[in-house]
Image (cartoon, rainbow, N blue to C red):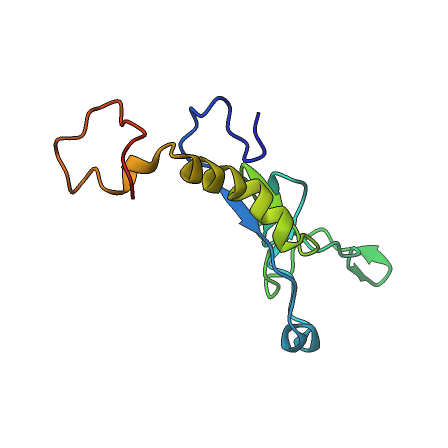
Length: 130
C-alpha cells in the first residue's frame, strides 16, 4: 500500500478530511463543538456532550427536557482523517506526493486531454503530455 492509501494503483479516489483548529474568534465565543475526530478514519458530527443526570427534589428525572436540543452523534468514515495537529507536510505526503511523482514520471498524464482528443488509445500511452 502506498502512502496515499492506494493498492497497486487500482483505487481511483481517496477521500481525506482535515479538521482545522479553532481560530481566536471561535475560541472566544465558546460555541459547542460540531465535529470531532474519533480516530484516523472516523469523524463524529454533532457529538453528544456528556451531561450529569437532572434531579428534582432528590429524584432523578426520567423524562427528557423538551426545551433542550438533542445532539445527533452521527459518525462518518473516510479513507483518512487528519486532526488539528497535523502538519501541511503530512497531509501532502499522504494525499499528493504519489500523484505528483507519477505525473512527473509520465504516468496517467493523458487523462487531462483525453476529452479533447478522441483518437487516444484506451491503454493511454505514457508518451502523451499535459
